[in-house]
Image (cartoon, rainbow, N blue to C red; front, side, top):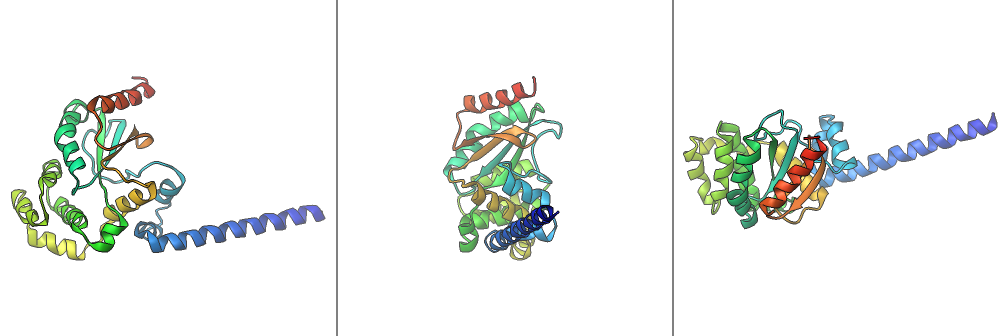
Length: 236
């Protein structure tokens, strides 16, 4: 009986220590990563589990190109201010769209390559992402706008891009000045948490899981080979 009591006390002590460690960890993370505070406030514990306990990237409630029934997913982190990402979008993405996305084989999830430093400095990369997020809220031509934003040569091109897609730039500016961007903080935190340094970064998997990671501009044959490997896993 005494031994059982001691075991119970020890188990309780270990549990309390574990809770204290988790609380301390999350308290620190809230200060460093805005998305953690946001998800805790919204009680989105599923996202936090994916964020910390797995290597998977979140695709819940995210816009994508392709069929909702396509089992293979590509999650692409692209930098709007990067020659590498522009090259990927110009030379690789159109063929990928034609061969796999339009044929219902792949769902493509675009995400932004953004760092905490970008947020703190409010630099041009951050301004791009901020305005583009507001543009996307106003435009039904998500695909056209997504491609168009890689032709920007500077923040001064934003009004012309808005006009091209019949978007009110004044409304977009008001949005950028006042809105909270859950997607931006989510992408930024995932970039930081995953230690991304090269862009674009692609995660190719099945329903967002079991991903193969490709950094930089991939040769198209490497991309098709990776997709084929996922098809084999599906038994296709």
